[in-house]
Image (tube, helix red, strand yellow):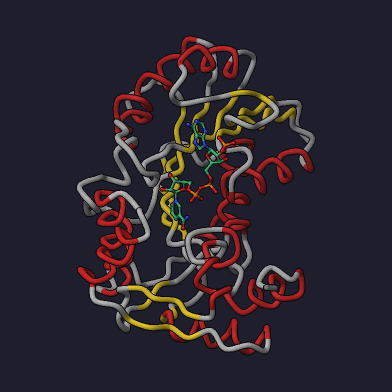
Length: 280
Ligand SMILES: NC(=O)c1ccc[n+]([C@@H]2O[C@H](COP(=O)([O-])OP(=O)(O)OC[C@H]3O[C@@H](n4cnc5c(N)ncnc54)[C@H](OP(=O)(O)O)[C@@H]3O)[C@@H](O)[C@H]2O)c1
């Protein structure tokens, strides 16, 4: 048990929500923060930053690098980390992604140098694509429609469970021995989108097909659905990372940090199907 106070940005999101529960189980005082969270925090409203940070011993930082619109991750994280250190927040755990090449002109690791230079103890998390993209994220509509149209080719991705990311974040926030580490977090095995679609189809008794779409055609399709062109390119480039097997090799980090295997995609699918996540 701990008496630490932890600020969780993105506290309503995929990893943040799960992290809040984990920290509470450990007895921490948790401040779940976001625009709609229990503690109001808005990256676009600096007046919300200091009140959210006040009194926290540690903070989990989730930025908006993968959202539509202009966003200077490097500057925003640098300034938030500065406020954090001034507010006596001693430990920062930063969520980034296991994508080191620019996608759609953006870097998904742009905040790393800022936390490293902040003077706080830092840990960086670089996860693969989350399982939860299929049941609460960008792939949910495709699964429900029965067709996952993506420019992912036959590429492989070791999808990681947001619960495992949260579990690693919790120990990095509360326990010693994780400062100065950059953790690349994957699931136990790499699978293709076709295999993912087949697993979901079998679990829900309804066919979900994976259809490869050319990168340019995919961007055009999204734009037709009124997705801004720069964001469509960002998503397409991100999926192209899967197509090109850029981060296809599983890591042993979850096992090293948590002392147990990461959650398998099949286990995630069984649970999501049983919850009715893909009911139409
Ligand atoms: N999804 C993946 O597969 C994946 C994989 C690797 C890394 N990541 C990284 O994980 C991070 C989160 O991505 P996600 O897709 O999983 O999203 P998410 O955490 O499920 O949702 C975003 C969170 O940020 C909050 N938020 C949105 N706009 C905000 C703002 N202006 N100010 C403060 N909070 C705001 C949202 O809450 P409110 O709406 O209440 O503000 C929500 O809690 C990104 O940095 C992404 O690069 C994601």
